[in-house]
Image (tube, rainbow, N blue to C red; front, top):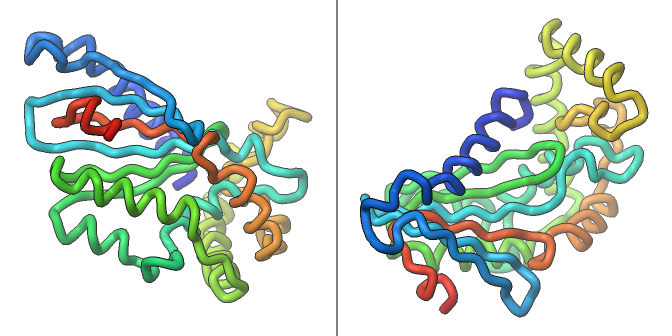
Length: 232
């Protein structure tokens, strides 16, 4: 997802999680109290209890967005939003989505200039399973030529349908390119077509190894959960 509206939705979702503490204090002694800690692998963890309903949202925010992309590789951050739903050495492509759907949950992802985030909303009993899935695709994503070619076609078509066929979207890109001049924010999150077409396995592997690591991620867990449970 790459439009300004989707970027705004992601930002508001993050703010809603953080602001929970200001509106839920009356629901329990720990509701809304933000707890954060650092794991041995460098991952920052933020836990926000909210026991109003038996549901929990599990989010992994990677500190990498389109503004951090290597020169000439525009669109690779958004590309990885797609690739992260592909097969790992432990799970087939689509297995994560099916597991979430099987328990009545929901999941999605979004990319912005400064971050890429993945989230699942499920019952508390499934939290450990979600953590296992996220940890697996952080370490064991399969990136072969076939996967790259197939998903590259998907993002190219996404650009054609969302940007190139929309005069308003094309104008927005031109305005941003003019406004930001030599800043990375001049480049659209979805990327430039001529650079997206050249993204290959070597590009993807280098990007994955550099940015999809625990010490470049923040885990946010909000809902019917206790910080101590997340720690263990």
